[in-house]
Amino acid sequence: MRVAIVGSTGAVGQELLELLAERSFPLTSVRLFASARSAGQERRFAGETLRVERLPEDGDLGVDIVFSSAGSSVSRACAWRWAEHGAVVIDNTSAWRLDPRVPLVVPEVNPGAVHEHQGVIANPNCSTIIALLALAPLHAAFGLRRATLATYQAVSGAGQAGIAELTEQTRVVLDGGRARPNVFSHQIAFNLFSHDSAVGPDGYNHEETKLLLESRKILAAPDLLLSATCVRVPVLRAHAEAIHAEFARRVVETEARTVLAGARGVRLVDDRESNTFPMPLEATGRDEVLVGRVRADASSPGGLALFVVGDQIRKGAALNAVQIAEILGGTSGLGARLKG
Image (spheres, rainbow, N blue to C red):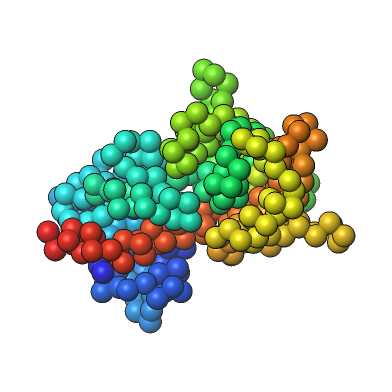
């Protein structure tokens, strides 16, 4: 298949390129696209040198699959034009996630939705993916009714610039200087604050609202009750989430452990004796989401509390998109579209 990565010089774009090589994705060619200021840069892939290109104005990328990670404004302007030229667009932005024409897919949760695409498929928000890798199998077993989440989100969620800001601020503060925020609204070194997205009239920021609405769509559970508090923390990579969940029936801890131990994309890390549970350092670079601190929720009889950590650049973005493309590549439906 002919593949394009739009936003190829960003953190997710670079991870996509690495994963295509690592997973031996069936490629005929790869084209890299980015902003005008990045055009002309070079990247190594499978022993070859690829040059980053500017996006063509006519929307014809000359490929079969487009991985789009250049931002929601680019996707809103271009995604359907790319699709009109015969590409299937796997979009990693927030532009089309709630559009009724567009499947919102976590391959371990709702792989069948891939085949319902009309040219564009949406990758969920990274925090949604990480949460649902744990919650979806529990929902299938016990019927999820309500969940409250607190997220601890790494600076790499803001891309390479977020990583650079934490690194530089940490150096400045340790040298006795004053940190000057640029990417974030507040000092991130030795600090944490409410997620840096706009706050709506209901008091929830956009990241928190995404968790609710995207979870409902992916699980096909329009009545799901979910409330999130999303926080940016001074961690380089991998998001963590504390989750308290209630189900249609009382959940016994041992049952929950059994379900999670057998869930796709999940690794159970829950050693009380050594006080070892999921950590961002351990989740970084892993395909799996780590789940632990599994216990009865003391505030809700029959409820469950757990702690989930996942690499939001890898599984929370790039890997999820590549897995969607792998499903497409194995279907006759894609073949028909490519020929048409």
